[in-house]
Image 1 (cartoon, rainbow, N blue to C red):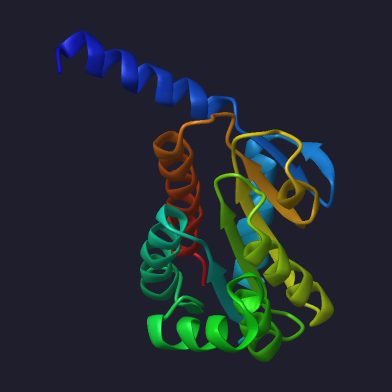
Image 2 (image 1 turned 120 degrees about the vertical axis):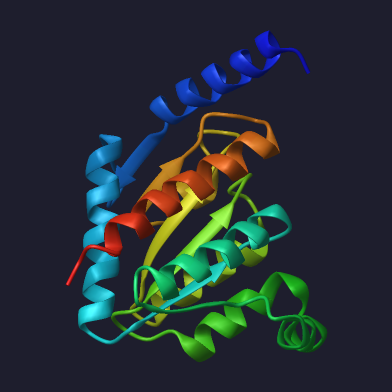
Length: 190
């Protein structure tokens, strides 16, 4: 890769981060306002001794696993991913893959908890079922999506970060960047 290709890619990614569209309780807000709301919500989870559950498929599952490390280590939160292999395959076998995350969320989540739902397309049925289950249990939902602006996940969350790209790599790294930024802010909260 030439230096000009690399420079172009980094400029494109910086522009992408500047064009994230965010919402809070269904209304459009500035990115920093959504970041501040996510930070406040997660800090409240820590204060109330509640939990954070994180779901994603494929590359988004890798983002979920990575950010779990930072939420536990830097953010000092009780956070866990819901894709531990033996449990996920058990739930998938017994309830179907589309219902696996929803079933796990129903079993674990309670009022005051937060579900972090990550889906590049914002259309993954198993992620949407988890969001529905979190709502039924009184948990709030922080969502991250990309691709189509009108995806269902975008309208189903309390706080949402939408990455304006149709490229998996850009969306996944954009989501990881946002979540890292929020986790880094949590490390200074007492």
